[in-house]
Length: 586
Image 1 (tube, rainbow, N blue to C red):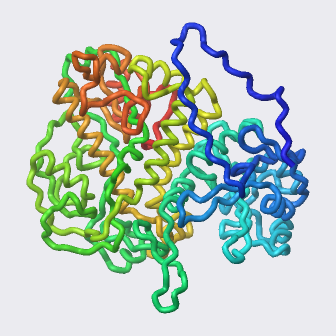
Image 2 (image 1 turned 30 degrees about the vertical axis):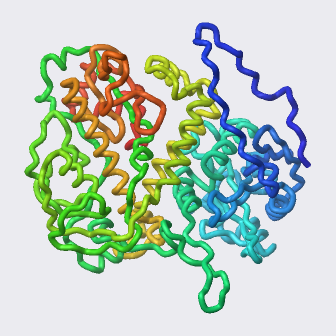
């Protein structure tokens, strides 16, 4: 039965206007999602040891369950929890129940998982036996931090509950900074906002990133069987389908069975994010005398690159000496070593920023950029995909909206001047720690989702040439990851080049989506190009709250940056201060 939360322990209302701040109107609150009558109590609940189940919007349900099996049955029959599908051919989201430490103890879960490698209860554990005896099943992941308990679908209704077990580190601090330590009602608020804006969590943010792709582009749809007239499950155009696809030889890795057994020796794509430090010998006296090194970070650079990105949907086809076509996604073997560029900028063609030394494999965007710079490209061979589509578009659109709305909740809105934007970004994490955690999770969903498209084999028992679980998924698509990263790196280089042409300024270092410039002052406003009207110059780096625009990453003294560069270290990795190692971008 729903019980309204008591008024007293609610978070104190914020003062209407902070003294000394501008009296800007708060951002318009995003309209509340319409409630689906099947799921009146929202997508999830956080269960505490006293039987209180904290839901979204301050709701508290009373959960009478005393065993895991009773909890599963209460969740499905009485809780009113769940979320409607994100696409008409998709599936409704299963209800999520998060167990706090005290709730886990009440259900007889051990405080820690002894199996630190497999991260699951042993199959002979009484809890696992209890679940199986009641005719429920566990997925291959077993009873671990994100256990899924289900029964095969009857008719259209499948029965499944997702559990997240806090004492077993379900909400790890990388994906969900600070959330595991919050009060149950606040945990419910963080996960509830994330579920409404992104997807009901089913694991770490990387897992959710992939799940969101599938939820927005379901692999199947109903089609009519010509002979019988019955509706059957058929391929959903624009999706990745239900079967995994072997990569083209240069797109995979040597361990992949298809590549390992073919004896491929033709080299591999190396489309990765930048890790480049400028040669100290190219610094001028004027640059060395500037007092500051200022780091800019591009908001969710991989998300910006995923916008309107054409990727391959069908099998790769091999071509010899093809004419280059920038509209066809694929991998091209081409020699870009003859291209002469300013040594004060990284090469756009390699993650290290070093000039290529001979023919190598590149994704379409990298080769197209060489053409954009005015060079003739003559591919030696290529693996191209005929059927194409903007597979990531709905994923991009949903995550961009989530990112922008969450930043706005933290006081960082699109209508701020650059000075106001920098001030708002400086304090946004303190405005509301719960929403700051949602923002961090959205960033992790972008970065982790793209990363998981090319998940490597794991575990010390793995033998080369054997299949591994990740490569059996239709969403194991190294070519799509390469397309995103290639476009992100090219976007970064284009801005670096435009900055050098407009202002004569050159970067000191780049690490993925962070770039460090020498500056006469301790703010980006001191070196970014503005028109006489005060508007930012198009084509260069611009400050702002949307994907692809920049924010301040950190400021240090120029001498500090030069010292790191002389030691062969990357100032972009450490510009934040402390030892906040940038995690290969967002």
